[in-house]
Image (cartoon, rainbow, N blue to C red; front, side, top):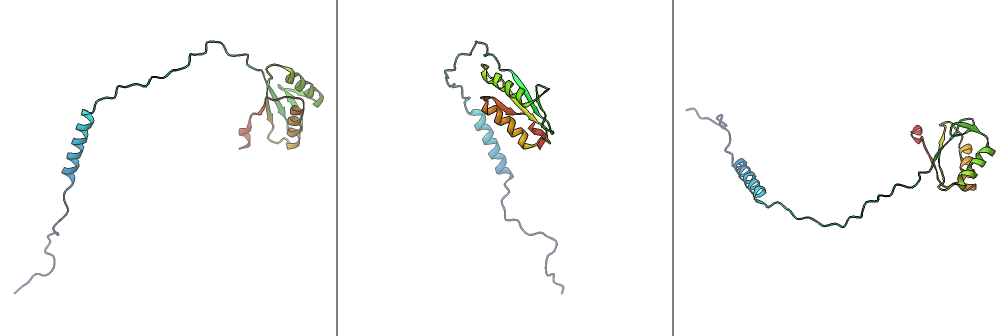
Length: 138
């Protein structure tokens, strides 16, 4: 007599519940819930300030101050010596509004030269000073 031992090609019985119909029912219920919700039509009252119709005040002039790698100082593209630069700083400090001084040092400029220019500007009363072109140092 022949007897079969082991699997006969039939898979094991699945004991897990099929969740696909359950998910479908949940999606339908969610869709119905979204459709039946009332649209929120309330609004929040805000007291917004009135727009400013006056033209802006006089914009301050801008001055391009360059420091080259050899210590040469340029004021709006014109080479100047330290005495002339100090006179320009004094003139700028007296103006109302003060001009914006945009310092653009060369990448190879010595720190000492740039620091002296900034110290002179501070000593002579220039307050609106900043750096431009700093992306070249990345």
